[in-house]
Structure formats: C-alpha cells, structure tokens
Amino acid sequence: MTIITIGPELLDNLADMARRAGDAILAIYGREQFDVALKSDDSPVTAADLASHAVIMSALAECYPGVPVLSEEAEVPWVVRQGWQEYWLVDPLDGTKEFIKRNGEFTVNIALIRQGQAVAGVVYAPCFGGAEGQGACYVGAKGLGAWLRVPGKPARPLTGAEHVRPVPLVVGSRSHGSPGLLAYLAELGEHELLSVGSSLKFCMLAEGRADLYPRLGPTSEWDTAAAQAVLEAAGGKVLEYESRQPLRYNQKESLLNPWFLALAPGQGTE
Image 1 (tube, rainbow, N blue to C red):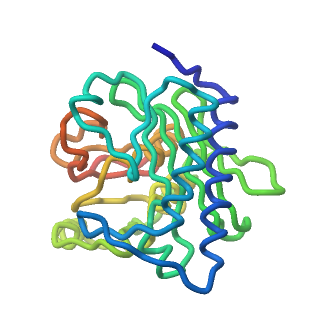
Image 2 (cartoon, rainbow, N blue to C red; image 1 turned 90 degrees about the horizontal axis):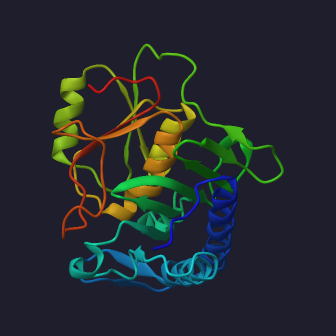
C-alpha cells in the first residue's frame, strides 16, 4: 500500500490542486445564471461542484496513483472503505448554499486521512481573504505546521491567537443553525457570535480571528477533515462534543459526524 510522505511537497501539491479546482468553480460562479439541482438528501449541487470534483480526482490520480478517494460527489460503500488505512477525503465545493447566494464564503477541501486521523489538508477560498486579499489558501499537516498563503505575499504561519479576548468570539454556521447551538450558547454565557459559511470557521480559529466553533448539528466527514487538519496543525483542537476525544474519520458506515467543538490554539475544552 502507498504511504504518502507528509512534507512541504505534499502541501504544495494540495494547494495547487485546490487552486485549479477553485478556478473551475469561479468560471461558473462568474456566469449570470447557473443551474441548481437537489441530491437525494435534498442538499444542492451545481455544475461548479462537479467541475471541481473532476479537477481534483484527475490531479490526485496523477500525483498519487492507487490511493483511494472519498468525495462528496463520489461516495464509496462502507464494505469497500472500511479497510482503508490511508485515503483522500474531498469536498469539491464546501458551502454550496453560500455559492448559490454569491456571498463568497465557499471553499475547496482536500484532506489526507491516515488511520482515522486527518493528518494533512488544504482549504482554499477563492473569494475570501479579508485584508490580505482574495484567494486565501490554508494548508497544514501533522508535524509540519499550518500556513495561510495569499497570492503575491509570503506564506504566514498560523499559530492562533496571540491574546485572550475578554469575551469569546464564537463562529457558527450561516446556513445551518440548530436548537442545540442556542442551548450551548445560553450556557456559555457572554460571547460574541459571528455567522460564517463553510469550513472557513475552522480557518478563522487557526488564524486567531475567532475562539470557538461549536457544531451541535449535522455535518458530514468531508465537511470537516481538511479544516481539522489545518486547525490541529496550528495548535487547535476538534473534539467530539460528548467524549471530548479528537474527531475521527471512517470509523463507521455513516458518514455523518457527531456533534463537535472546534477550539482555537490555547483555548480550553469547555
């Protein structure tokens, strides 16, 4: 079985793949209109999802032949994937609802999973970047660290917050609220809440732009893996809500995650 070397070359390759997939997405995003279909679970899918998927699948097959891939747009039965020790976990367009709303808060997510752990990942946001400009590319890997790459600027290491806010800044889903979240926030006490789409919530934690992301509602494994790899490489945590153990992958037939808490570097588990 192929064992992928975790090093700078891997992160460079993933960043390049994600950017090319992002270009395919933007080619459709720039149209005046695009079709939106519903999948069997009533989640939306567009031509941009499929175009990004095609780019990533081709690139992974070329660079890492023989390594299996699980993508939101190409699910694999449990009987096949239950023996996988190393594989790619991909969300070609995370935040399809944000893409449809044209608010720019969507990403390309590619993660390397090894024995249930997200060990490397890239989150590319073609239309996001704040003061540093658009095209934010977050990369990270276990044992290497995490960086924000923006076109035309040096890569910036991600180490989380350099100060403690007097009131925690909590990020939550823009399109997927839940009663569980409201109850958690009531118990948390004083806080600020910022709604953000897609896996950018994790990236804001890794940057130190937010402190906590409680997800007390449904997500799928491809929604979180790449961003978890980046956040953990920056020194943060992604913990199952009940057990407070790290969120893991491909441990069961269902691809739904349990509830979880994502924490910026230096934050506690409560």
